[in-house]
Length: 287
Image 1 (cartoon, rainbow, N blue to C red):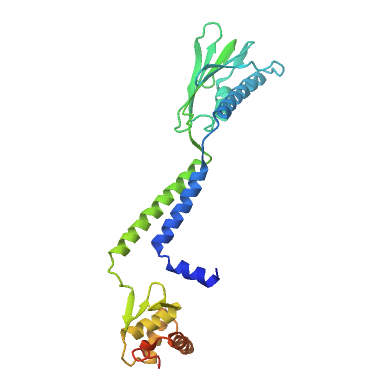
Image 2 (cartoon, rainbow, N blue to C red):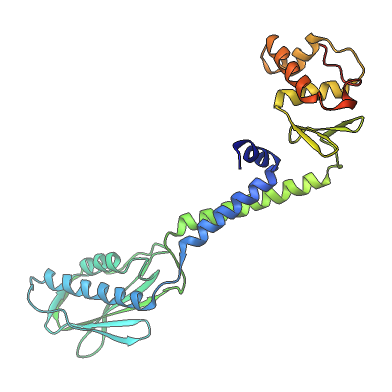
């Protein structure tokens, strides 16, 4: 396919078609940003986050040798870490570690409880909500050295996630806007009477939308300036049109003053229209 034919096809697409094509393009990209997570991977990431918190709590107690105990799954969305030796828990440290490791990719909302190992009594608790900011109470009050259980429950672990929420949603929204404006333009164009952007003279049609002459089965491509000149000649068929009038309408109104260009375009039009027998007597190119 030649460059000219590609350009011709592109010109024949109206703006509503282009908007629909762009909408489909953005929808395809936004869909590619969606992914169904591997549930096993999400579960393992949650366990790793819990172990990382346990490890750093032990380090905060200057314990670099005691292994982190195994993570217990005590519910569909609840994990437990049972420390094997007494430790001091600083709520500030625990909150910082929990926010760091239980990020929005793990869960949008988490509840962390610290319990006494012997009585199962909750001695400290807080919520992490990545959707809204909530004040966390009782910071700055260290829990005395004791045997503790750390339990974390996770809510909002969605079945479908996004690699990147903001870009995908933005692209989806942009696609909706393109579709809306495309439909609006399409309806507006269909509401126009047929042929409103065409001029016809002795069976010869001048298509102002696509810059071309249509005659029987022939189609002659025109430039923008050639179309403007011919539109004036069609409108004033049979009249004597001065050179100054054409220059004024086609160039001067756009802030350009030229004379030689008109001669060049008239010469090109003569060559292009020469095969059309019905146009010679109705449109004068002797300007």
